[in-house]
Length: 321
Image (cartoon, rainbow, N blue to C red; front, side, top):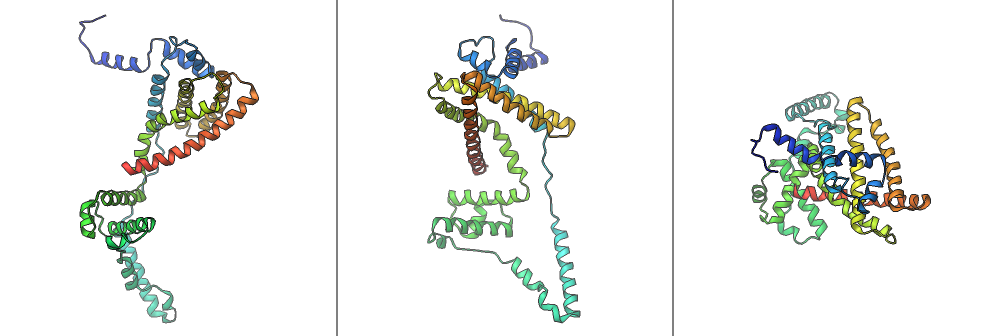
């Protein structure tokens, strides 16, 4: 029904949160059944009893938004350590002075003490290799040597601009060289402040998990290939279970912050493992032994896929950072 009422500020927020949470009474019904009756909501959904429940994909997105919001509000990141270069140079000067005094008073042990001029010369010596020399090397040798050249150049000049650095090194300004030099700079920066990369990676984690679930559902489908379930039905089951994980660990994160203890997270882990076993048994309708064996296999597959996905995601995130 159309309305001529002027929109107020609170009307906007009421409609916004209604779109996320209030699927009439379906949100609360879905949450209750999802948490306290493992596997039932997925079973009902594929049997056509869908009107009473919230859409599984929309409900998943709502739960993931809340979870990652809570996670971002409770960071456990240690502050980066900043070194005072002036203090470091002063300490080096003091060390050289002490070594010179000891060397003068005890000439018989002078050979054990480092020479200041030698140290300074070693500190200012940087590796360089012409680009045409890299072309004569194998791929891996060329890759590592190029990294050493770029790394030493950045350490000496602290030049972040790839074009300026390549011009100084007399290297071609190809896309590969520019990309490679930028990644070398990123590595050096992450070495001094790793939070830069991990904060970027965590911001992409919701999308990574969202695209990971369809792959995981494919392996569930292969494991239950003889059962009368379509791939989409396995995917709905995976989304419901992942939503439960978000809810449980969202609560655990809140309790961790309140009590300053990780015990709630361990409790949530054990509850979710038991929940997942019951959900598999209810949804697929198999006996305890078969369900337990497949539950173990699925979890092994899950962690293998999770490891592969994590490595790939870290590399991809670093490549496009």
